[in-house]
Length: 321
Image 1 (cartoon, rainbow, N blue to C red):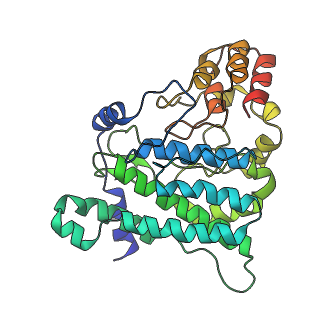
Image 2 (image 1 turned 120 degrees about the vertical axis):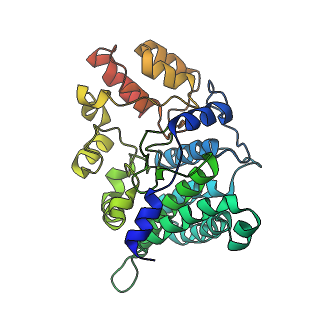
């Protein structure tokens, strides 16, 4: 199969916006709490739990409590934690297990023969996986570079599997561009992102991962809140990572769309409330690293809040970063 054929197959698949909206409304648990218990078979919850664990790992916070219902793919959050702690070999071994689980989640030819409805899902995933490059290996490649880029590649596969299992249909969705044609979908732009903080400590590795992935990056590589078009500006990303209060006060950063699913009270306060509302939620024990179903945190919501004064906005950024 040529790459042109593969791209065409990957771009020819997913759902209509209305169906996606219905599915999100029907499947996503109600928001309103920091707690996000695992729900077997719920890809949205799994997505949010993975992003939350990655955020907590990047911030040096304890791991989420063990949950017997956790999806095996959630281990990818723990693999990042091990990598950031310097346990490169353990992180690599965890990726072995994650990749094995990914393989088990792709329908086999036998399963497709028994259930022809799985054919689109099988083609959708395999076509995308074939496009992904290999992690760099060989003389001169450092172990941490190999493992980090491999991690980024596994992260793309985890996203694809969760999307395939969450969406009612894969028809019409371009997995490379992460958007639906011809009409937009609630699943457009969904991807798991490296914590913004690690741009300050692991920028060369992030740049190498971005270079290797190229157009297959699937959206912003990090969760640094940026104006559209600056997601790959690593100088800008590093400024945000090192001094978010100074870098995130421009109006240009505050006009992005706000996510609407699996929200917490802290996210609501950040989106619409005052500095006092945000501080009150934090004092009550809210987790600023908790992600919603699109991978956004309270900090992303804050950037759409146009009611705060510049001084209050700066203080809010410091609270939520």
